[in-house]
Amino acid sequence: MAQTPERMLISATAWQKALAREAIIRPIAFVKNLTAPERFAACRELDLKPTRFYQLLAQFRRKPVTSSLLDETPGPEKGRRLLSREHEDAVAYAIQETYCRRERPTITAVHDHVRVICRQRNLPAPSWKAVKARIDQSDRQKLTKAREGGRAARQRYTPVVEEYSAQHAMEIVQIDHTLVDLFVVDVVSREPLQRPWLTLAIDVASRMVAGFYLSLEHPSSTSVALAIRHMVLPKASWLAEQNVVGDWPVHGLPTAIHLDNAREFRGKALAWGAAEHGINLIHRPVARPHYGGHIERLIGTMMGAVHFLPGSTSSDIGSRGDCDPQKHAVMTFDELERWLTLEIVGRYHADIHRALKIPPRLAWEDAVLARREPLRLPYDEHRFVLDFLSFEERAIRRDGLHLFGLKYWDDVLSPWTGAPEKMRVRYDPRDISCVFVDGPNGESWPVRFADLGRPRITLGEHRQAMAALRARGLQSVDEHLIFETIEAQRQIVEMAGRQTRSIRRGAERQSRALAATNRQQAGMTDDGDEDDFLDLSPLSVEEWS
Image (cartoon, rainbow, N blue to C red):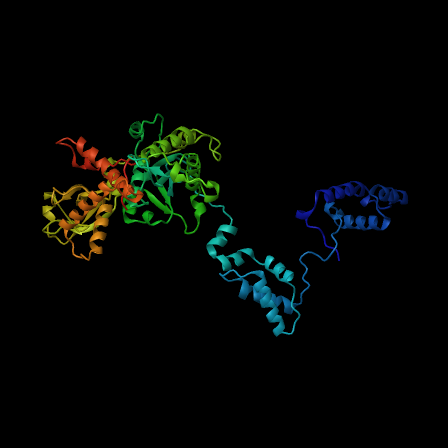
């Protein structure tokens, strides 16, 4: 039996042959009285015997389309099953019981199972090829779900049609993190430290980079807060500090921020700050990475540019070859930060975007004009940063405010001493010598260590000291002992700072975490606002998670 050829499988030669037949047969196909000379002339032109000519003529009369004149493929009709119903049932059962398992058994294992079933039922076993053919004809999405899980099945077979789109500037901003494919070196010895983390934000409507934050620490609520700060506030003064000539006009509070489901995007600090400033938080559906396509492509673009720098790890080990990226690392953290700024302002924003067909810089101008109202800024820049910092609820004890096992005090807390109500205490992990207590009328008071002689420390240092004390079996909180431990650890770091990478990395993080507040305190006047203490530079210091 012959089978009709499928249109998707027709070769160019077979189709040209059918076209040639159609040109000759169509004019005479529906002539009522076809003469013998006309029939003989058609057979001669088509190089066909009369029997084959009449066969094609009948096929064309039944279905007057060119494909009816294609030659039939010899053999059984495609999809025809030659196994008996008993054999089909045995194969289907073996596929369900053996092949559809997370251990992902082979086709041979399924065939062995079929042979056992057939032996039990006194049936001849089908061939391995027949079993494979039925696996190939099964629902691939269901098989993948059973063997690899629902996520793999969705990523492989579910159509990707949804994508977030925006009509005007700062309508939707996507934020995500990536580990930069580059090793940075320390400032003093130029020895390799680590790969930093990059938090990026993109305006969906214009594809402009809305802001970024570079960090030596793993992403945390603090890195999210500082990335949002950089995104929202005007960047002219910051570009001047970076010694970058260019224009980065993106600023303003977004209508919505689109995020994945990482822990730092689910924190109470981010939820509070977004609600306080009228920002809607949209989290991607779980296991649907294509919903964050804009930020993922931006990360890919930025890392693609980084791959040309010395010290790059490339995107995978195969493309790296035998090159050791740490041996070739030359850029410090600050140099990488400035390089990224130049890459964004001077290249990415100015180059033609493949999807938009225009540079993002021009798309931003159009997206701003499309807004019904002007871009809005926070009413208070300093308070805006505080609203996104991590916080705890604490009651004010008679001996002060207790947080992290440390005591804080300021006379402004006196009216609430001993009261049962808890107050919201915000803190910056980069410097926990000062916390910020929210008052009942929306004000925020900076409150420092009760002992003003205590040095400024990071939350990371505090945790390291507590871990060291627990290792020594000291369970009770002793504030004096905590600071003695931190001081001893700092001395060790100072003495051994150039001996190992991990020690140098800790020293670099500590110095960067406290550098900004050093500059801020030195620049404050005697009658300056205490809130100026938290002038957090979004791209020049590191957070401690």
